[in-house]
Length: 267
Ligand SMILES: [Fe+2]
Image (cartoon, rainbow, N blue to C red; front, side, top):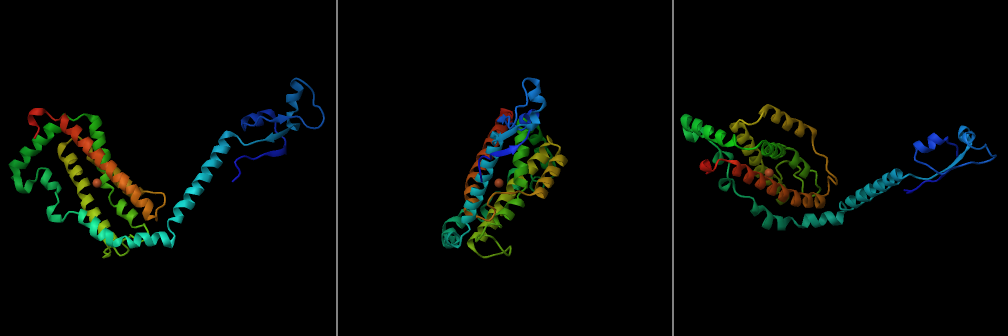
C-alpha cells in the first residue's frame, strides 16, 4: 500500500487545507490578488496534497497488520502442522505426566472451611475467623482478588480457544489423542482455581458477590478474540508466557493478602 498519496488538481479553500492538515496550497492560473483578496478567492487554488502523518501511520499499521496476518497463516501450512502432529508422542511422554492425578490434587475444600468435616459449630467458628482476618485486607488487594477470580472463572472460554487450534484440538470432546487429553486435563486442574477464589471471597464477606458473579457471566458471554486463532504455534507460545505470568500474579496477590492478616492469627 502506498505510504503517501499525492493528489493534484484539486481545489481547496484555506480552511479546508488546514482542516485536512495539508499545507501545500499554491495559486494556479491567473493571479487572484493580494492580501485578503487572495484568501477570498482561495477556492480557485490548487493543492498539491500529500499524506499527513496520521495517514502515513494508518497506512503503516494496515500494512503491518497484513504482514502479521500473512505470517500467522503461513504457520497453518501442511508442513508446519505436520511438525505439531509429530510432536504427539513427545506430549504423551513429557507433557501429560505434568498433570497430577485427581487423587493427588488439592481441592478447594482442603483450603477453606468445610461444613461437612467441621460440623455446624466448627464451620461457623472457622468462618468467623476467616472473616476477621479478611477484614484487615486493604481494598486495593481485594480489587486484585476480584480480577484474579474473574479471570479464572472465565475458564469455559479458554478450552474453547485451545480447541480452535489446528491438529491439537479435541474434536469430539473426548478424543484420545495426547493433545486432547492434555487440554481436558489442564482445564480440569484449572477449574479449581476459580472455585477456591470464589469460595474464599464468598465466605470472607468483603465483596458484593452478586456484582462479581454478573461480571463473570458477562465475560464468558462476551468471549475472547485472539490473533491467529487456529495456529498451535501462536497458541502455545502465548499460553507459555500467560500461564507463568498468571502464576506470578496469583502468588504475589496471595503473599500480600497473607501479609495483611493480623500476625497473631496468621497460620
Ligand atoms: Fe488458573
